[in-house]
Length: 228
Length: 228
DNA sequence: CAACTGTGAATTGTCAGCAAAAGACTAAGT
DNA sequence: ACTTAGTCTTTTGCTGACAATTCACAGTTG
Image (cartoon, rainbow over all chains, first blue to last red; front, side):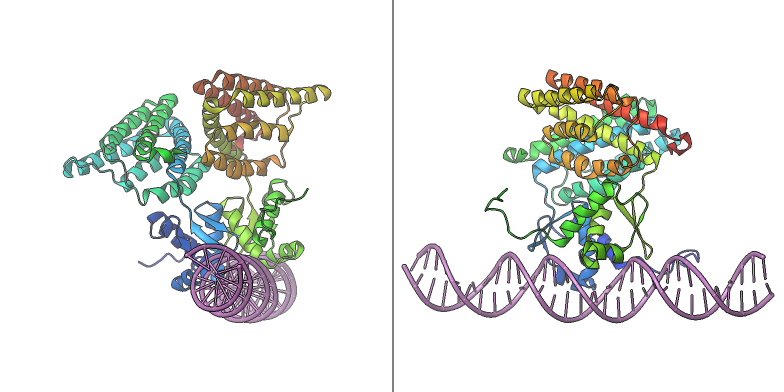
């Protein structure tokens, strides 16, 4: 494809590229949580010098995706089961609010689109013969749409740029709870219904229930000693 | 004071020092929102080379306190009135949740302490002869205590390390609404009462009302055109 | 006189090298 | 055998220099 002439020729800075690459590697599990990052070797394999790499790492530090210890080195952040539970509490608060705002702002057309997504996924799931399965991309898409429909840019950034990245840190190794998929899908149906009703209180309550259930399901699978 | 022997002798890295210094300068208004940061001159005045300064800036980038544009430079983040309003919505969601959790965890002694803070401030305010005044340090202290009492480290970091810094960006230039001080104090009384009752729903509702009122007060003072 | 082009200064982006700290390994001593 | 001291290697922290880009301003042209 020929790029538009109005677009800049030059690509982003090395720091931007490296940041994205690292972010991708971390949330995908390519760089495992807790694993150490060696500047020299990583810089070599990315074909950049240590300067830009260090700056990219600093940015991820600000977003809590990596942790640095003085003169020791950088590690990919590691979430304890307790941290995960705590993050899901934060998510419950924020996405509950997002659903509240979305209920007041979403157009019927947008809600239709959301419902279409819902049924499309239901069909896919039937093909899989009832096997517990909840495709992450569908789930993300469903939630992202509602978050974006909130019309609150700060809320959107807090959730999508910060919180979801941290959550994916965990999701990279532990898959979703087994029996949750079908239940979660029905909760999505409830959410769409609440959004269509336009009732902010109901939308927030239903969304919070949904995320709270996800948290309880996760907590049930965790070693009880690790709850703190 | 003599430092504990178990503490390291060496100070933090230059990046850590510069990060703190910049953060302080930004939230205090010493570096005004929207103002440009020149690496060379700032590095010179801080007596460090550009490397550590750039890394510190990258960290603040990750926290959205500064914004960088390719080959142009770095600016201190600037919040529109709409952004402020949006941030207060996020705060309402998060601190509502913090109050909910705190209601279930705070000991009577902690609540007494909170109440002591409340009345101490009331006395100070009487001395000021009814003049509308809400000391920022008191207000922060009040809210911080509840946030920390939530026992949720992720929630605490989201609020204190991220959100409050962004909010202070704005507070640096526009002071609190005039008539709010007394009302806000009474709302604080309500919050303490709710916490003492141990009822999570009530605690969350009262805290959300409090922050929502603050937002509405701010929105009233803003140019209506800027609400988006 | 307006608009465009070209030149130079200022600023950001990147790199390589040096200094300092931490970690690993060996060897000696109790 | 276990601890301790010493040395060597690896890795991080920091600096200065160079390259690339942007911005400001003057000169030129229509």
